Amino acid sequence: MALHEHSPKRDDTEDRLHFRPQFADELDDPAIPKLRLAAAGMPAHTAYQIVHDELMLDGNARLNLATFVTTWMEPQAEHLMAECSPKNMIDKDEYPQTAELERRCVNMLAHLWNAPSKATATGCSTTGSSEACMLGGLALKWRWRARRESAGLSADRPNLVMGSNVQVCWEKFCRYFDVEARLVPVGPKVAHLTAKAATAHCDDNTIGVVAVLGSTYDGAYEPVEEIAHALDILAARKGGPDISIHVDGASGAMIAPFIDEELTWDFRLPRVQSINTSGHKYGLVYPGVGWIVWRDAKALPKDLVFSVAYLGGEMPTFALNFSRPGAQVAGQYFNFLRLGFDGYRAVQQACRDTGEWLAAEIERIGPYELVSPAGGIPAFAFRTKERPGTPFDVYDVSEALRAKGWLVPAYPMPDGMQDVSVLRIVVRNGFSRDLAGLFVRDLAAVTDNLAGQAGRSAHGAGTTRASAARRTHTGRTGFHH
Ligand SMILES: Cc1ncc(COP(=O)(O)O)c(C=O)c1O
Image (cartoon, rainbow, N blue to C red; front, top):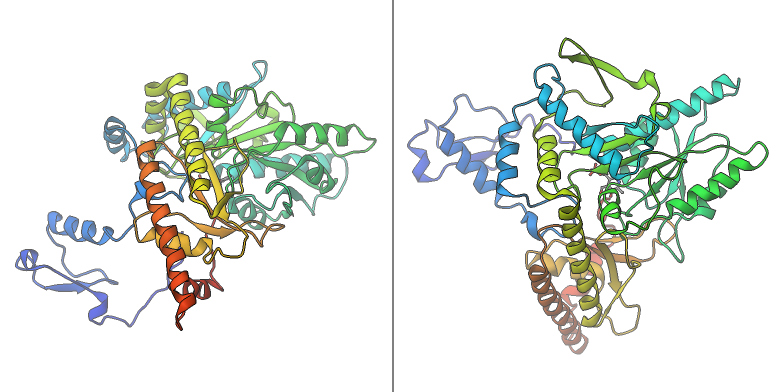
């Protein structure tokens, strides 16, 4: 999470919470420090009101088209999750039924991803895909190291091959666990990893290749089957390295099984050793849950596994953290029961239909063109057309949409295509066709307005807000993936 600095000296009025008159007479002090614990507490309803009021400044989660994370669940799911939040997932002995729900979810996912019936696929819940990717990466590293050591070879320079479009969690994995991040530049034709580029970057020290099902940048699926095939050819060469694939299906592993059934990307490919997904993305659960499944016992080295007490015996666990609320796993199981396969298919198809409709409408507005291929997860990127006479850029559009409540990130594409900046929209459950229509209306208005401002300034002496904004964008840090 964000790193915050301690401000030991400051305690001026800026750093105090001031109470409204309705609450002030319940308190000894009409203003209390923000950065230190106040000497005394306050009534619960006052504390609630203060926190509630302050959080009004956050954006509206439902209008946040930047996030892949679920922003709407049914009231029954919310109720169930509130009931389960005091339960700690790690206390398997105390909450055996929560552990049982986790076991059922892992089984459902292994089945959905075509885990081989003759092997014992194994998996667990995590806090999200980031933790799941760390676990997947660790298993790859451990297996590679064991192979190298048993062959009497050095194991001190591991690398992981992946497109430069990977989510930041993979760079974290590499930095935290001492693995060279071999980031393959993308472009110019596609903004993701290709089979040819992947194999060209592999060698004996490659612990694995990460294939992303649903790129964070533009929603595209990477060609897992082609990558697997190219790695088969590499392994068949004399002395060629035999390299496993981890599929980062943070979004796509909960989309493809339902609406792209013809696509082969999962455990049907023997080279795919592990798959992760975010339960809190297209698994349709509020933030805080991810999943990872390994195809068989061999894929998950035993010395990464720790045991905790469970019903008088022991239960194997693999996690980076210890305590975690049980609510999200209960929410995931609720969704699996509530929707079933057909229900998930209907939800994901509705998202894709809305996305395709929205993409077409955005192109119709005029100055925009899509940079994402069709298909993939229901997220797409678009940019302003490169033609003289488009007097604003994607950063201006992002900023102007914010004033209407819509949060749509603008950012440069990854290494290899960095000169292209785009806006990205993630269509999620709850972003209905009706809301999409309202968004198109607002985007059209914003576009007219930006074009008008630029036109007016071309006749006057001043700078447009758009061009001023463009200047302030130089040096921006951009959107974090
Ligand atoms: C492809 C991909 N991998 C990993 C992650 C990290 O997922 P999480 O936010 O669940 O930790 C994301 C998040 O957007 C993603 O898109």
